[in-house]
Amino acid sequence: MRAIIPVAGHGTRLEPHTLTLQKCLLPVGGKPVLEHILDRITNAGITDVTLITGHLGEQVVEFCTSYPNANFTFVEQKERLGL
Image (cartoon, rainbow, N blue to C red):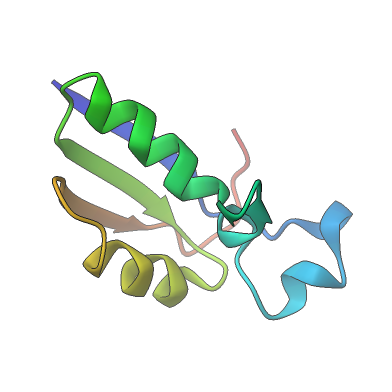
């Protein structure tokens, strides 16, 4: 099974915090939101994860390279499309 996580948004409602940090990497409860999501996904036995990146996507890729127990695929959304 594969999890698909959209993390391409700009996070305009969270500015100024998201001007330099991708919104899924903002800390909540001592760790990035994305880490909370990945922990739940991998605990459920899902190890294949596709992330749809966009705004500050290189930060997401960098974060995921240090996350254990998951195989990541990245798809870049170049144009803002929304959900």
